[in-house]
Length: 154
Image (cartoon, rainbow, N blue to C red; front, side, top):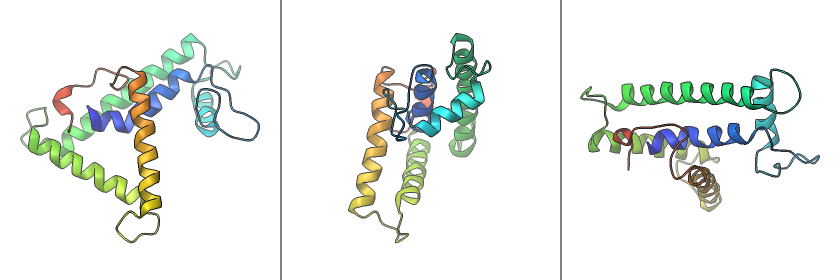
């Protein structure tokens, strides 16, 4: 589902890349595009043997944790937007979810607090969305899991 993918896709992809991403000394993104702070967080959480890399077992644990997080997020979205309680989002429910997402993004990127996105804020939002789309594309156009298309707002 798009809203779920937008919320979790980037993190999921970054977990899968954590084993080989490397940050440069100036703190820029690593050679695979992972921000150093995120890489460090993933290593702190999942690098059980402390070798600075995620081996297969550690990546499997990270992947399982991300799957559980996706399922939890999916349930939260259904609880919030599934007004008729059928376990799926119909067109009206999808529209409500989409509007909520837009409002959240506007709140997140409206740095000057005027209630509107100026040119700089719109550019930052576009970069953010483009990055998420690129991360989804790397996984074949979907999130990391088997998200149901029934709960995808268009």
